[in-house]
Length: 240
Image 1: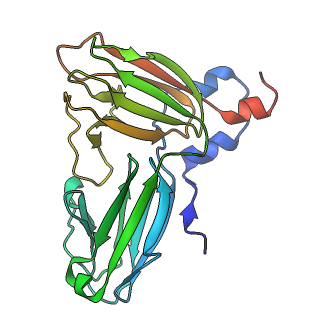
Image 2 (image 1 turned 45 degrees about the vertical axis):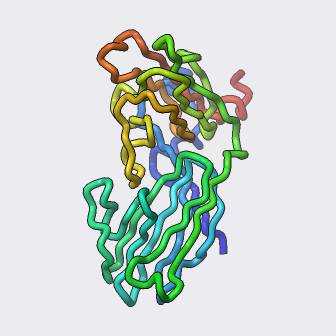
């Protein structure tokens, strides 16, 4: 069974429509940031128990009972009716809850159902470096700049956000993406304030548009940039 679901929201579907004006491609919009992989929670097991995804992807757990379950990774997330890190309730619950966590860095994450770990109710998410699409970089530099500070990519491409030194974060003008040691809204315990620690986050952008961004450190008011996401349909339709 294929457990990967491509984003099918109305915003994501828009990228399938051939545009008539280049300006339509560069309209400001909120980015759609992840592909989603589904894990079923049922009968004291996770199915599939072990999955392989790419950094920037999301795992969606769907509880089908009949017992009270949750998903818990030490120091990272605890989810059921939402995730604790996002103000949800990660206590084990028997209702038909759905919880999502996005993974931004290559790593292997072991998780469990807290009430049933002794029965072997455990799972693993193996997060690999993205290999689909093209990966670009935006680096926060010690001189309080972003390099590059003007980047154009195609919808579906991945951008690796990295801190190379200095107290930085990455924040889009509309606050749809705020990242440092992790990204807001991912369901994980993160710190998105400017920090001097080295951090990295892989983000996949699906929605064409312009995304102005900045570092929220009040001492770095000139540390800004813009990311332009072009529709891949433009090039597939010979509008070069």
